[in-house]
Each structure stands twice: as structure tokens, then as C-alpha cells.
Length: 131
Image (spheres, one colour):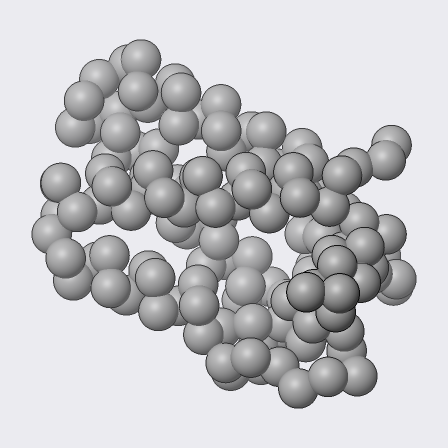
């Protein structure tokens, strides 16, 4: 299955954005700041830039990055259900499911279940070099 390199990143951002909105409304700014900083600073080498280039932020193992991303997703879903009800909760859950479907190869690479970087990530690296 070929995935446009923009789709997984876009869905991941939408998932994070809605999770952050629910976090601020329900739990305040501290959890938001922790979430944003952890997602911005804890990066797997080769994820945002090719492995040969310097990692932005703090290099971490893939499993830790998965934990941070899925932790944000789970907090967002649970908070949406608790805070505003079934429809927004199901919408948030749907966004998370689409993110997992489109970004699954990246998560497998993080977990060490595949040795090569997914093709759509290589396309993202090429596009970032052009800009």
C-alpha cells in the first residue's frame, strides 16, 4: 500500500492537536506543556531527518517515542469521552485509528519490527530537503 507522505504526519498532528485541546480544557496547561515538549524533543534518529543528519531534540529509542505518541492519543480519547461525551470521543478515536492505519509502518520501524525506513518517510525527507 502506497501512502502519501503528508497523510500520516497530518493525521498525527490532528490527533495531537485535538488531544491537546481536551487536555487543556480538562486538566490544565501543565499536562499540555509536558505533552508538547515530549513530542517535540524526544525524537528517533531518522524520523524527522535522515539518519545521517543530526537529530532535532533528544535522541530516544523508538519504543519510547511510541509510548509518548500513543500516550497522548489515549489521554486525548479518554478525556474527550469523559469531558464532552460519546460523539467527540468516537471522533477522536476514529482519528487515532486512521493515524495508526496510515503510520503503522513508521511505528513498526520504531518498534524494530522492520529494518528499513518506510518509503513514505524517505519521501518526507526528500521534500524537506527541497524546502
